[in-house]
Amino acid sequence: MKIHDRAWEGFKVVILSNEPMSAMRIEQAIAAAAPAVEVQLSSFESYDEAFHYCKEQKDVGFFFLHEKCGEQSFSNVFRELAKQSQGHGIPAFATILYDGVENAFNEKLVGKNANFLDYVDTVEVLDPEKTAPFLERTWGQLEVAFEDQVFSRNLQASLSASAEAVLGSAGLHFSLRLTNNLLGNANVTWLENLATKWSLVLSTVQESMPVVLKPHPVLQYFIEMCKVEISLNEENLQTFLQSKTSICGKIAVITAYLNEHRKQGTLDQQLDLISSWNRPGGAVLIRQIAKNKSRIISFQESVADVVAFGGSHG
Image (cartoon, rainbow, N blue to C red; front, side, top):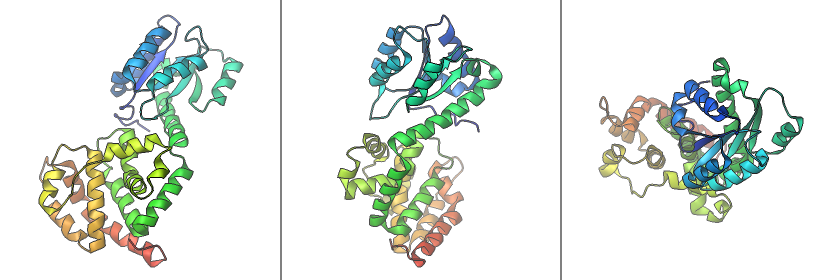
């Protein structure tokens, strides 16, 4: 599985080892295996320098820490660096590295901390044949750990049920399928993708039961990422789709707009209208909607089955 070029974008990555040249060699190996990640990387041999960097940047979200990364234990180092980095409530994570021989005590420490993803020999990073698979595995671990901590399956189910009570089964399922379709070729970061997928559910819950999201600053941040102040209609629709508004905001707004027309029975006409604006090199969302018009109509037909088999109307 190839990592999306923008996967790591949105938070920076710090490499820290007090072993001479170790951090730099790790940075070079990662950059060679995943050139798109290079701009996110910074390596340090000094804890103090890493601390000041994290405090200044505020958006370091991942650490490759050598188990020998300073006078303090790597657990303490991570805790202090992560404190400086966590903006919008987004947790930081780390992979702990060792040279050749595992330390049983350190391995146990890694296993006890949900923010430590793995305990890995530096050979996995430095061997050119192993670096890319190592990064892919690490990225997969990061996705799972992030969702477990800030957006668990139980929370997702609870929020979806709350949104469905407001939107109805048909409205929710149509909107989710449409959002996923429009995200298909979107040039977005991993966090933007996650925020956009859940924008309708989160914004619906925020409007109907704002107290529910108060304990979840990351989810509130997701809402802000996709928030656009506009009342969309046929007169400003083309201008909006061609505007420089963020792709996250565009998808969230057009999904709500098309869902409303689905309810009114005018979805086909709106899709025809948008498709008529399709031109080579034109707006990405217009092209995506024109290309997938039949599929989007099928989303409408499939959610009708949800209602027919006992789902709520919406």
